[in-house]
Image (cartoon, rainbow, N blue to C red):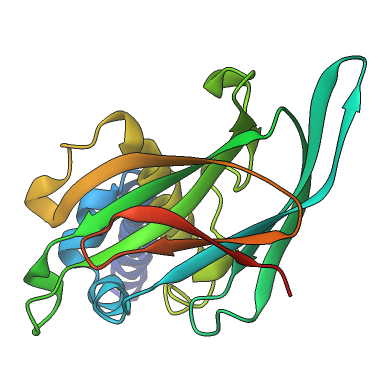
Length: 225
């Protein structure tokens, strides 16, 4: 009798272990197969983070470091600065680029969320810097500002409460949305679009990139300090 009981107990332990292993495998498969649609519709922390996005005005700066002619070509060295969301005077990314000519294009990706995330009825948006290029350069050969798929520094605190896996999934998919802007409308992504502004750069001016309330992207030139 004791032997049978021990045998049954052993079998139950084996079954329990199998169920635990299957549960772990199943959870791993579920996590691996999650999509940004799942995040946007199910993750409360992500919804809270999006609802906490505030209106932005200044999102970056640029100025000419050097401009000269060489072998008959006008060359412009540009310093680009990405500024913090909470403090426009704080620099979070600084890069310099050598551009042929004086007309320079600045390209950003804008992701607008609809008002289901907030109680005040106002939409929210992410502004992701993409690339920079001169008028003599094809957009496909532009120099990157932010690395596509990476988490932009200006938003590193926004999703701090999400798991590393979910943060990586979110940013990878957000960048990919530029290729399929209508895919997530049912999950609250109102629009995804690229916006390009170009300006003739001259020494002595500071170029301030701003976002309007409706998501419009524009640049203002002011005397450099």
